[in-house]
Amino acid sequence: MAGLIVSCACFALGLAYFLLIHWVLRHWNALPVFEAVTDLPSPSTTVLVAARNEAANISLCLRALSRQSYPAGRLQIVVIDDHSTDATAAIVAQHPFPNLTLLRLPDGRYGKKAALELGAATTQSAIILTTDADCQPPTDWVWHQVQHLQSGQLNASTGPVVLTGTDSALFRFQALDMAGMMVLTAVGLRTNTWTLGNGANLAYYRAAFEEVGGYTGNRATASGDDIFLIAKINTLHPYQVQFLKNANAAVPTPAAPGWRAFFRQRLRWGTKNAAAPASAGTTLALGIAFLLSWSIVLSPLLFFWVGKVALLLFVLLLALKSWADYHLLKTASRFFGQPRLLKSFAVSELLHIAYIALTGIASLLIRQYRWKGRTVR
Image (cartoon, rainbow, N blue to C red; front, top):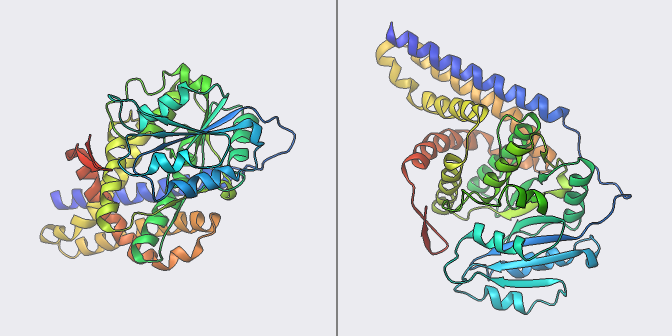
């Protein structure tokens, strides 16, 4: 009897996940693609780039930012060096872009949040954008974000991020996961159900940043500059943080180069998500995905309780999750012009089950990790 009850509970999880993804896709398809217009003003805008040990990437990032179509006289780029031990600061100092400022975090202040707060404090621009030092935003990125804020009467806007890298099973898995995450981000903000975002493609009014006190209350957590800030603004102004749905505004960022780097990256993301304030929708969605993944992993063990029914349950759970994920990832990958990623769907789906199950546990148990030469929490 106990085995049948557990089996029914597992099946209910699979069905709940299937319906959740169906609900997500319905809202994603209802969200219009944002089209930039030409008759909006171009307010003073600053792009903040927090950088630590990014000598290999910062030149390409600055080159992309210096080629923005936004009026040069209205755009400032501020790089904040977070005590780099390589040539990052020297490379920035030598860059020819006239509207570029290099700041250095003083002794006693460390981390990305401190860097972004310093950058925000030194600009008078009405609008602030952030990206990462290893990103190369497209030419119209600033225009898209500024106009999205203006046309939607928003306080903040987060946009799409796509992964770049050498074609491999690991890359395709990461890229599919990121594409799906963009859809979830858009729907979560549109419905005010959960809060997601990515600091590689983020924009907000400086007044909104100051109104919520920047990263006050979150500085002790090394990561999460994006989610913490979005959550604070959204709490104060519900529905005024939205996703910029436009594939041409997607910011490319490199995928993790190997499994160890990938695990460390996702552990860092999982840790910040665990530390961020969780809504009921966030808890429910994450709980369904986490418990379903473990149900798939452990369902074969029910064979000793319920016999062949356990094998049927395993197949049903795997089919429900795979069917839902395939439609989610097909929609996402096609929207972002990456349909080739689907050729690795079967392998990626199995990896995703293991990834959700293991990193979910790890992010709750591991509070300390290495990042750019530092041990952080």
